[in-house]
Image (tube, rainbow over all chains, first blue to last red; front, side, top):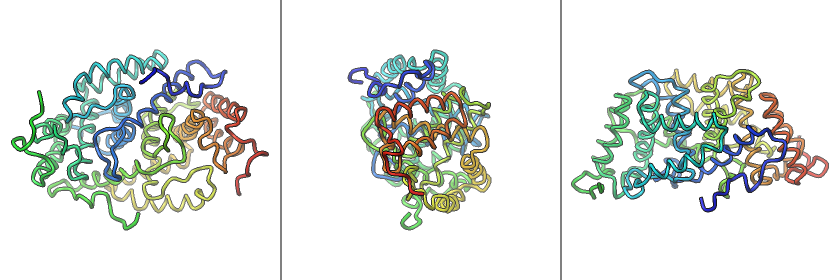
Length: 220
Length: 220
C-alpha cells in the first residue's frame, strides 16, 4: 500500500457507531481490496484473470460439494472459514503465482508483514481468531486445512483444464511443478487425487503441460 | 445463455472420471459464470462494479465476523452455506438490481427457470440440497436465512457509504426504497440495524441519498 491509507479513510463512518462494530466494519471495508488482487489463473467463463475474492468463493463452494471425498472426516463449516480467510493477507502482500519462482521469493515475509498490519484492524479476539484460521490453513496439518489446501490446488487445475493450458503454460510450469501441485490434492483425498492425475495425464497428452525435458526447469 | 452450451463443453473432461464426480465438476465449472455477473454496486477498492462471486465471498466473511450481532442464535457454518449459494441462479438469470423496478419484474420466474436448468447438473441428492439452501435463503424464515439476507442488505449499504453514493444515486433509489432495504438488516439484528440507520441518516444528511419528496418515486 502506497501510503497506509485505509479504504474507510475516503469516507469515515459516522459518529455514534459502536467502537467494536466500527473496527469490524473498517476491516470488512479494507478487505474489499481482495477483489482487486489478480491471480495468474484465467477464468473459465471470461477472458480475464481471476481475483482472490472470487477464487475464495469458488473454494468455499467446492468444500461444500466435494467434502464427501475427504479421506479424513472434516468439519465443513470450519473448512469453509479456512478458505474464506486463506488469501486475506494478499490485500497487502499481493498474489505469488506458484509457477513464478521470483514471485514466491520472500512470500512468507511479505505475508507475515501484511498479517501484522491487517488483522489488528479487528477487535483483539477476532484478530486472534482470524490469524489462527490463516495459520491453520498455512500449516496444513489438520484434516480441514489439508482439504482446504486441496481445493486451492484443484480449482486452478480445473481452470487450466477448461482453458486448455492456462497457468500450465507459464515458463515455470512443467510436469514436475504441476505434479508437485497435484500432490496437495492427493494428500487430502485419494479419489480427488485420482481425478487430478487424470487431468494432468491428459493435459500432458494434449500438449497443455510441458514434459520436464521439453521445458525450462524451475529455478531452485 | 446463447445456446445452452455448458462451460465444460469447450474442454470436456477426460474419460475415466467417476460419473458422480464428473457431474460435480461440471457444476463447479459452470458456476464460474458467477464471476461475470455484474451487480449494480460499485467496489470500495476500485472503480468498477462488483460481481456476484466476490459479493458472495464478502457476505461469507461478514457472516463469520458479525454473527455475534444476530438477535437469534445462528449456525454460522449453515449461514455461510446459504450466502455462498444464494446468487447461483444468476449465472443464467442475471442480477436484478433492487433499485431498478424494470429489472425486478419477472425476476422470480427467471430465477426459477435458471434453478431448473442449473441445479440438475449436480447429482440428485446435492441438487436437492443446494435447491433447499437457495429456497431457505429466499424465504428468509429461518434465523440463518434472516441473518444471511441482512448481510446481503448491509454489504451494498457499506459499499454505497464508501463510494459516497453508489447505487443510492440510481433513479429508483430514494429514502423510502433505501429504508425498505435497511429493514432487512433490522429484522435480523437490532444492533446492525442501528448501524444501518446511522449510515442512512448521515447519507441523507450528506446528500448521498435523495429524500422521497426530492426524488423520482419508485414506480409501482
